[in-house]
Image 1 (cartoon, rainbow, N blue to C red):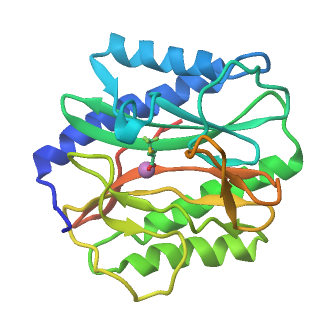
Image 2: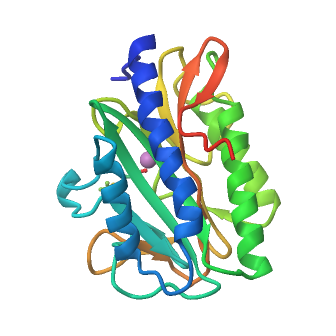
Length: 250
Ligand code: MF3
Ligand code: CO
């Protein structure tokens, strides 16, 4: 069942989203060579606690952390760990913030020092593909319009779109209907309606789209060891079009 949110509910989610956006802004300078993803985890937990918020991922289906930290060929759901990040790494930090019971979800790929042109270009195309998907998130369009916009652009730039993980509705819990694939055909799938709040979170790989699961049963990485990047926003569908609830507004 697809739930639609009231204006008030969306306002509360926007407050959570603003806080989450500020976390990613802080992380831009916090993340550098020598920092560990466990230090990022602890920084985020403290930042949220000081502002009366909590991390919704911790305890979700047995996941033990506030953040996911996915390095280089890890696609998503990497565990925070004590290994130091190195110059040239890319790391995707994903989290769900709960502020006053309202949720917002956003992942962002951060650079560690100077990165290769290959990594930078992957990141640029992935971020642009997210915004191309968001443009389609308006009443009257269908779910397939979002996926098609992302896939046609990303593949045209020479990247592969991960198919094993999708965007999703979000509300009282992290994952709600509908599921939003980042590939698909225009005009197909459920119709988008005012009041729906969804995430769009394309993961693009330099090589093949396939993934394999680590032994921890959470972390997915590319089958060919190629780099993977991800950008995710929580988006409200309104009569005036998409409203990004987790925008970082530089
Ligand atoms: N934020 C993730 C998403 O975009 C949720 C990861 S599942 C968790 O869907 F268990 F790690 F929380
Ligand atoms: Co999500």
